[in-house]
Image 1 (spheres, rainbow, N blue to C red):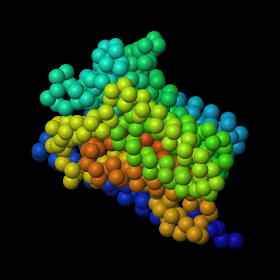
Image 2 (image 1 turned 135 degrees about the vertical axis):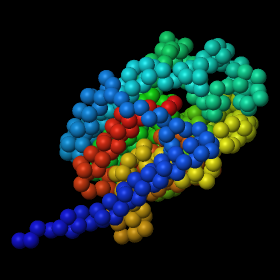
Image 3 (image 1 turned 45 degrees about the vertical axis):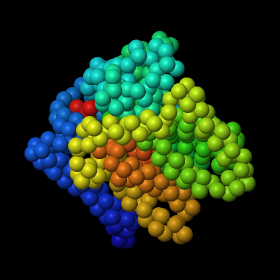
Image 4 (image 1 turned 90 degrees about the horizontal axis):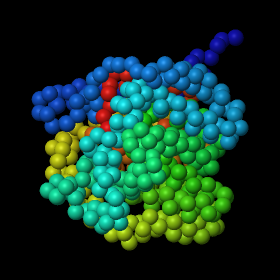
Amino acid sequence: MTQPSLRDRYPGLRADLCAALAAALLVLVAVLVGRHIQDTYRTLFVHWPPLFADWDPHVGPGTPAAVVVAVAVAAYGPSVAARLPWRGLLLAAWATALAWTWSLALVDGWQRGVAGRLTTRNEYLTVIGRFHDIPAALRDFTHHIVSASPERWPAHIAGHPPAATVTFVLLDRIGLGGGGWAGAWCITVGTTACAAVLVTVRALADERLARRAAPFLVLAPAAVWVGASADGYFAAVAAWFVALLALAVTGRSVAWAAGSGLLFGLTCYLSYGLTLFALIGLAVLVAGRRRVRERPVLLALFLAGAAVVPLVFTLAGFDWWEAYRLLVTRYYEGVGGTRPYGYWVWANLACTVLMTGPATAAGLRRAGAVLARRRTTPPAQARLALLVGAALLALLIADVSGMSKAETERIWLPFAMWLLAAGALLPRQRAWLVAQAVLALLLNHLLFTGW
């Protein structure tokens, strides 16, 4: 009997490989063109375009653990994810993501990879002393955003609503001060995003697809920036907003809708750009529209929850819209006004490739094919593709806005977590997982990533 060819056993594999190759070529072109622009005009303000990184081949104490985790997940991740009880899978996914992210962070050592990340001159911990009176600091927040302001805020504080800074102030108040605790907070909370995405995929699509997505969410190249970046923490808050909304619209307790709204409000006060997560929330509502029509109280509870954080900050004296207007001014006064839009509008996507990996490029190709023939594909796959497509649309809007020129490998972490779920649509998962792991290990060992 003639053995079926690889093409017959895995239909679409050639197109998957072409998508991955196209993504790799995009990265190569972004590196070469970026190197030319930076060497010639010095307008990119990054040392290793398109990433905010420096060339620095090295190994560290996290190297052996990172290799072990990568080999274990690539070899056994798909089979273990298929067998574990559901709650056990969520716990195992989080624990493994923790191990992967910690080991990658510790490749750079404790101080350089974790404790020192949030203490540099542009980071949140540098202004803890200015928040000894939190209400007064919130009332005065917008007076220090633009470049000409007295005692202007460092870049990250000015670039985000104050919930981000207040988080680290509160950690300091309860005795968890300093860069070590702040880094541990971002890694510990940030890695829960993989569990939130799994909960959402199971609720909206089905459990089989969630189990297939799990290894890709765990072994994400994006973990290079989750450890230790505040954007990893933001990613988790945004992911749980979506997860709780998915639970609410698929027949679980309507109380989840209020919790989802509360987290969405917090998400918008952690990062201005994450208001675009409303598109992913809308995709959840579309997928669960029957339940929403039957229980309109869901939307009422969501909106009530979403009003809480904005109301608290507004009553405390912080004006979100005014702060955003002033941020735009500061952005164009600084490097944002110099970095060429014509390069970053597509090089940002190369950064996305590097944090999501070749498997995601192939998975997005499959998700697009599912949406194109959604009437003839399994409903679960169509709902997963809708979710992934909404995340990609949000990312593209952020891209064309011009407010994210460079450093998007960190800024877009919240969107990246949802793109990774497209790996559930891929055959030959172990081979793709190897590619994901190799990319992450190379990035972390050849480059020293900024922020």
